[in-house]
Length: 324
Image 1 (cartoon, one colour):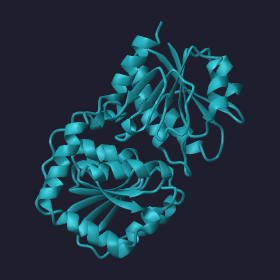
Image 2 (cartoon, one colour):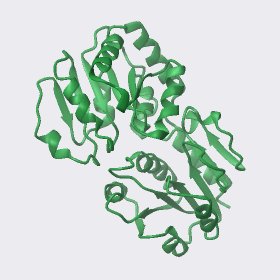
Image 3 (tube, one colour):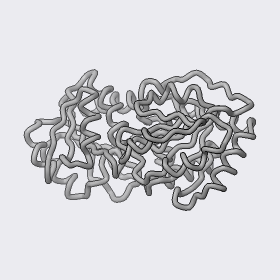
């Protein structure tokens, strides 16, 4: 089959859509011809670069996806973008045999053949599509996060990882970096490829902070006892790796996910970044560091519910249902 994926990512909207679809694209490319459709803008430039780095052809459009879609002769169009409405799905359906949408929030009744929601709160929504793939069983994680061995939880926390995603559109990494300089832990801070001001972090230095500009997330995660993360795709990577985590909400689509994980006592939610102050952040961080039993419980829970094989399950479904 010829499969087209429409996704965007960059400094404002983050890189989550790009990164998760790349996982799926690699799985689909084992049996299909896969290409991308992306809006051609400065905002999306880093996302397009990331896609091309992974070996996929990008067809860029200025105003409407219909400028390129009719020429691709695609059998399936998979969309992972919030910049869509009912008219978009109706229009694109005319040029492909099957349509799919990767969703997070169920904002309206998407007129597509298949909806995929990989999040832990997917079952809280009512979907009416013919085909539905919902929940962590369909979580799109990179190969390095699949079937990770059980993590050993140290009684004393020494190393803490901090990540606000690939772009940190609200620039919360700056605030956290300033808050942690007097704490007696080793901090490993991830600077994503779409950060607005990477030079800021290149020009600062603290004795207890290591900045990673081209990080292998799995490698950094493996040596850390605990993490502070935005409540996006990264939170699932920590669960898969068994790393106890404090989550921060930096975007609207992250709130319900963070709350669900907190209600299930799997991740401790710090709430919205804009409501979090230095004192509360430090108190909550130190409290979790001092509670080894709780960290062990959450580590075991996370690794039990995530196996990292979601992208393969989605690809298998598409290959079986849509190939003919």
